[in-house]
Image (cartoon, rainbow, N blue to C red; front, side, top):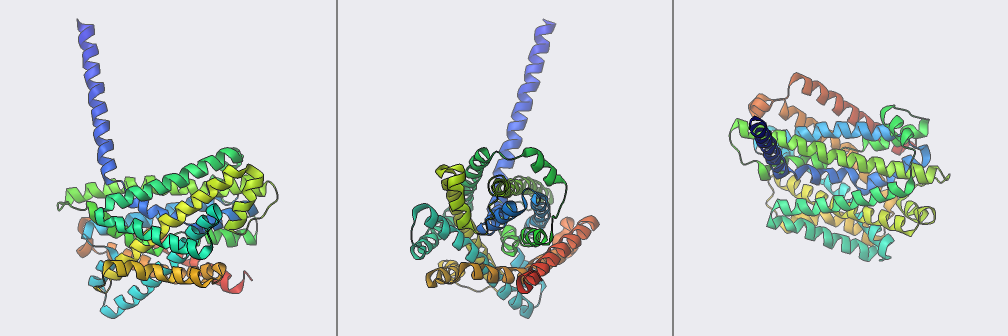
Length: 426
């Protein structure tokens, strides 16, 4: 009998643990979403171009750059989420409370330009994806990208959760596409692991690409947007409820951002295993798509095109959502919602329709983003370091030091990127 009782007792404990794990899983799942929307900015078409170029030119050497850029991005996204949870307001709204109106007008104009500049790259990615997959002329592909983006963002009307699910589906498509690419590419996993852990810069040109990967990783528009997206679940008023929310959001950020890291690393790994191995230097997304077909087969080029399309559509939707947050927050402009969406999208659509050189457009958009980045990071770190706004969530001394280091590194690298852009690496 004692043996039976012992078995029953162990069964009860095992069942309780299972229910406990199930409860924790459901709890975490309830808070999943905002960071997945944000992570899209880290796997946008601009990342495709930089990662593919890095892999085809320098083999596996620059994987560590992707890892460290991801670590810095995680820190800044945690800061943005913490600000939103602690204050109950997004970053643009907090700036409107903290800074003078003239300062907010400057911040708003810079942030709006950044959102529009970001949309340029995203729309170009979606447009190229449609063109490469279905041979739709660029003009019509651009209009179709705008229309699909509008639909994705419009789903917000039926709740943020629905938009999050659509974005998660698109990220899943990108993930499965690159998993398939990795399977076909058969990379050298020993070298992959080595270069993930051990930093190396083979030459001056590699430094330029490393700066491109690292310096252009953190997008200012998603710092603004993350502080807004957490409001959907920011219903608790007590300190403990807010602390719980932040703990759950940190898990959300850790999972989503590391999926983004894996996808980015996969882009570079596939490029190294396929293009570098065959002595092919790829300098554009179109080249990558065309070169994959004879090397890995038609299914591989289709997987690439589908990943690019999913990336372009999801990231352009996120850019448009960020534009809405920015327009409303800084100066409280009362502009109808659909008009706000259209204003953010229009520059990208106009450039595509006019047939302006996409490469030059991307350079200009990168320059705008580089100038805007300090205007997002510095106000966020200033606000999160003040107790009267953050209360118990104020940055700790260690967080302040890390914040200064991360901001300094990113701003310096963006400055270096500007220098290389204008001076041609001279």
